[in-house]
Image (cartoon, rainbow, N blue to C red; front, side):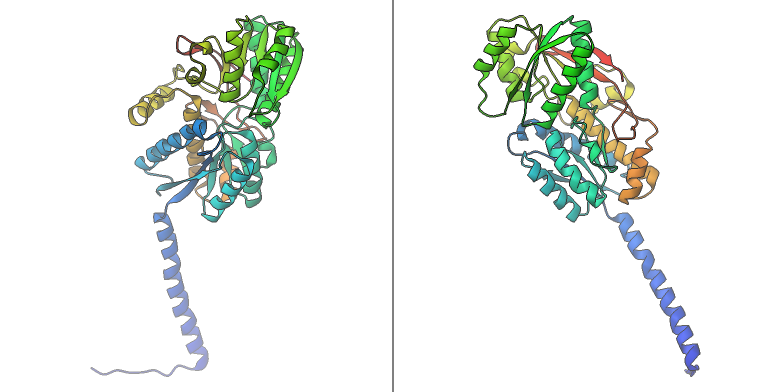
Length: 387
């Protein structure tokens, strides 16, 4: 067999070399795309595992694992597996910002979290600057989504929640007077205290006193002694489990007849802290397992078969947050932050466990809230309040 070599002119050699390199580069250029299609889509869950909020926030991680497993079992997102990366914010705003920066370094395309509004606000500032979409499942303070266009939530806002609770107090319970106790160290508590107060008085009630405290060494007896001097129809404490349990447990011991109201920061775990003294406490919620939609009933069945009892709306909100993200990424056909953000903003009405979800111009959901009562050792669903 004979071999021949051809001596092409210089310009021809350059031309042929260019073609060959174009073909080679083009062939290799497809490889990252194919390999990328096989790499997982990284989504983050950021909230507390340790510190003051750790115990209450832990169910958020359980729910995140559940929904990501469900997504992966049904084919993932855009044909790719989802990798859930969990970050502990150590129950602080500083820890939340640090966790967000770590998530960015780890290449996550979107973040769900936090539970506490003060934590979410700190995290949102970092993610907004990095143009990474974020959905808060539980932070209700209005300032969270005001950080910027990449920040969303699936829970209602304090302004809506405060109005709904005030309306319930005035219309359903016939309360004419109220005292409000606010944890001044938490944006969540301060915001709710303000919105409840304005709405209660707008509806014809009178707020007799608004007291302030800071989580930690709270002088429950002294504060409640002052509340008793006003003897209100309703005592509203928009705090967390520990402080609400302290105030309401001691109020029951005083055998007062005030209506005890709180917000979405509590739930049936109040029984674990003050036992039967939790009976009769009213609180707002984002969802109830008594909701009779097919998707809600299926969620309860699947979650309780695989994880455990669904006894808080946190689980449903985490589920909806990840599923709304999944739907937005698939509509965007991309994992680029700006495209996911735009798709989230244009969510047409996702049928979620907690209701039909679409977002207003602030990234806040337009959906109903629920009023529950702790009763008979469990939760009694009372009514829904619509925007």
